[in-house]
Image (cartoon, rainbow, N blue to C red; front, side):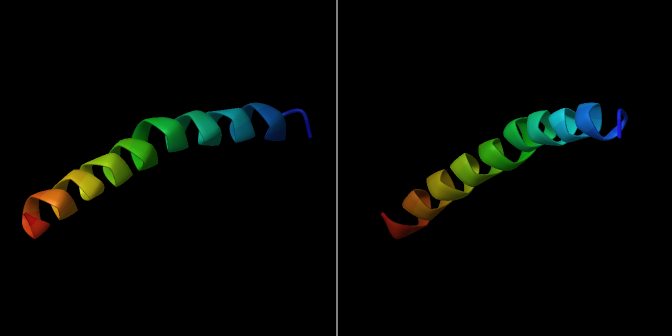
Length: 35
């Protein structure tokens, strides 16, 4: 159980650094295509 908590924190940090920038980049690409 003690190992699970640091792992969850790592996953959250990973999400913020990987998933969110990709979503932002995707939105920028969509705007580029629509204009």
